[in-house]
Figure 1: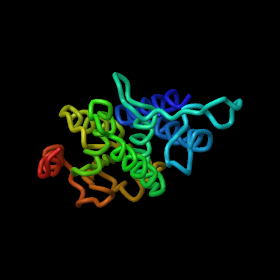
Figure 2: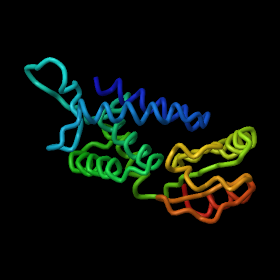
Figure 3: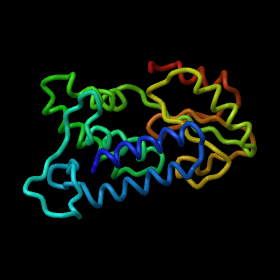
Length: 205
């Protein structure tokens, strides 16, 4: 079911941001590709709840309204946006924006669209990508933990000592480097937690 994929992808993205273990980012990307292949409806621009590759059902449904749990489509839209940043996939960002636009047209009762509203904030307020690189993974980890000690919901974290994830390419400078970016546009790298935090607080979160 779509909510299984959406929740697992979100968990992998959270684990990646907590550990910078690229295996979680790659797992999220691979699961997203499977979800697009098996659940995506290109006509409506959203996802079916059941796989189109399974048995033929009497009626197909789509889950768009949030409740105590996020709707499957809202979760997938958020996943697509974050993955589009990590892997520089403009097509996935377009998918997410198309889903959000459709949700806004339908939303007459905002308590049933709280997860969509979170994505709306990501797309209408400054959203940052914080990239932390260094040859020493222990330096990356300590810097990461210090920056993540403050709650910054409008931020995606990435980092490590390799360049296997597109967001990290050409950002290994041989020393601790913290890039504060917005929609892929990065300021000059800084080498201290205080300077990076200062760049993040110049615009509202």
